[in-house]
Image (cartoon, rainbow, N blue to C red; front, side, top):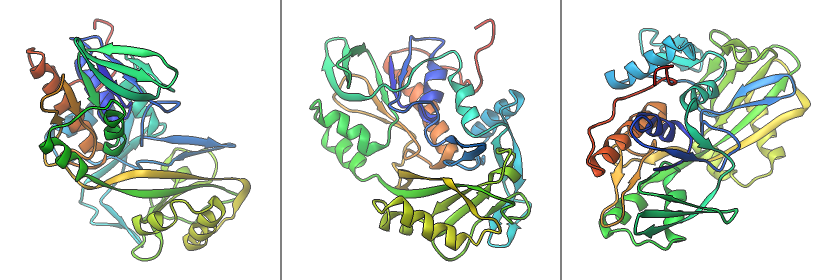
Amino acid sequence: MLVVGAGVAGLTAARNLSDSYDVVVLDKGRGVGGRLATRRIGDATFDHGAQFITTHTPEFAEVVAGWERAGVARPWFQGRIGPGGIVNPDGHTRFRGVATMNAIAKHLAEGLDVRVSSRVVALDPSDAGWRIRLDDAAELAAAVVVLTAPVPQALALLTAGPIALSAGDARALQSIRYEPCLAVMAALDGASGLDGPGAVHPSVGPIEWMADNGRKGVSATPAVTIHATAEFSERHLVSSDELVISELVRAAGLRARPIDGQVQVQRWRYARPATLHPERCLVADGLPPLVFAGDAFGGSKVEGAALSGIAASVAVASLLGRAEPPTRSGAPTDDR
């Protein structure tokens, strides 16, 4: 069995299926996590993708509780951040990675056969299910494929096949839309000036979110992550790094200055699903077993991705005529 994508959805699906099946997870990136992303620049550390995790369903609350027990997640603050700090302090708890957000993904990947820097270029139906072609000319075979990459990228793999989706599936998948997000990571020469838990959600301007990674407990030195609004990101997706940095740092109004040579830009082309598929996964009609999953299915953010991964594992078990797999959120135990 093959899972394409080592983000939350892919790792969750793979973990739930790994007790019953041989599962291989492929990801084109250099590490696991997808948007549970962390980067080091000099001595500074940045969470530059998903900034926190919230729970809105009992199912996902149980998953996060498992991460807390494993020591990889902890509460960051409660309520919602506005321009002046926390509002609605009795609202949902925002959880963060104890070390970094990416540490949660690494925890999920423990014990799994995850192969990074492995870019899938095409899928071909075969008598046994699927033949998977990689960019280094290697090939793999799998009875079932779970695609958790952003839907436009997943569709490109099928087109390269080429594989004809049913009219209904093609229409449903092509209707999914994403918003981009530009992220600036800046190491600072002093304190950022952000109060409270170290985050702000401006109500106007080009910044959607800004966090102080030091106050968050991620970085040992002053470091901010700045997320641009979808509008700004769409307008400047192919603009130079220099322009993006200049515009967003100026709008941030930081107390300290960015350190020369320690500022970078991340372009999240598929940052947030703007149009969702109504179900938590999609099982392709008229093809060998093929399941689409990810945060564009049934709910966005980390919670949506995890619940989609769980749903994909249930769908796979159903396709193969097996019992529903248990939901597993943590690393394998010694008696696995």
